[in-house]
Image (tube, rainbow, N blue to C red):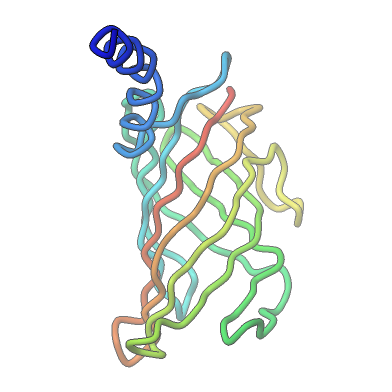
Length: 169
């Protein structure tokens, strides 16, 4: 009876184990009509511009990114809170515009290094009206979670980031 019960428990736990493995390995389970999207990039902190790679449906597209803080950062909990930030990703195949909020918190080891966390939403038109989602990303929508690191001078003066989420186009 104990053996039978152990088999039932292990069989019932297999779907949960599979889901945990997917999440741990970094895959996103996209709802119907949505595709997983990931974006990684490097931004120079002096100009808030840099390079980015977007991966949608296994296809990688590289281009440039411009980060535009639409409000001054607010000191919060020892870090900097950017309440409204717009990101313009420009590619040969079109542009992708996001808006969101980000929080940079200095690490305990070095105050010139901050962890970066935030949320981005893919938007059809820029908040400033100066850019729009176009080309391969025309009419796209979606949400992304951002994690990264900001290295203030004198270190590198760069921010590196990874964003993962879903996109609907």
